[in-house]
Length: 303
Image 1 (cartoon, rainbow, N blue to C red):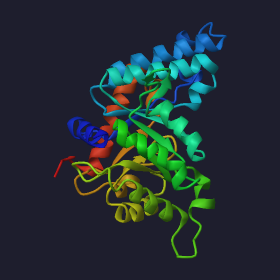
Image 2 (image 1 turned 60 degrees about the vertical axis):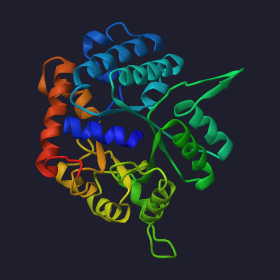
Image 3 (image 1 turned 135 degrees about the vertical axis):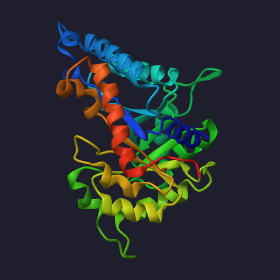
Image 4 (image 1 turned 120 degrees about the vertical axis):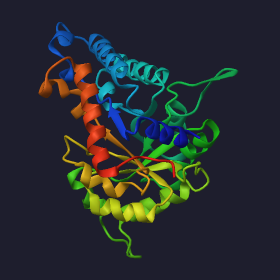
């Protein structure tokens, strides 16, 4: 099961870090940006940047998260760079999370799911287009908008991370509102995620249907960790958004399991702060993050 694969890679590397490949042209060194004046050239430069960075970190982190918006802005060429980045990371043995936050009515959600998790029918054959391991999903439409993703997760051994408590400052405008039964909106969504994933729980007690829970909301994370014992967390907000290791301790269980922590700019642009090549600086940033998380979580173990 894909969630077990992710957890086993976390245990193997002792590093619950997810490298966010939110790569845009401004992040690249000057020599890689020189003369880039078209979307095609930008996409090629970004892909080259991503490949070299992946080469530098694939042995010390379990996963990458590829945020599609940073590729869509460069048009069709950018989308090809997205697909090529996903494929390259998978070749290197990394678990790949496509951060696309997709959702719609059931029939349209099924097409989104086919694009990123499942297969697309072409004549008498089916093809895998992106073949991502996990996909982020916005479940605001309710169960019928999520069901196609759940079906493909079961069929193709994929996983989801569904928005529950996001890291942005204004998330509470909606997510913290109280419902008639006393629950907050984020608690209600968390309960739904736990239910949706109840028949996809792996060997370590966590489901392939996970939740996005921001590092910047530790009190809410504590509530959700206790409330959702089988839900694995994708944790944004560490680093540039202000999340600290101590703040996200509540996302994990006593084994040091329960989540993977995303860091994008802090790794992609580490060279601007620390010097050296971008890929060497990225590796050092991943190791520093590993040490920072270990200072709070301790050894990560299976039992």
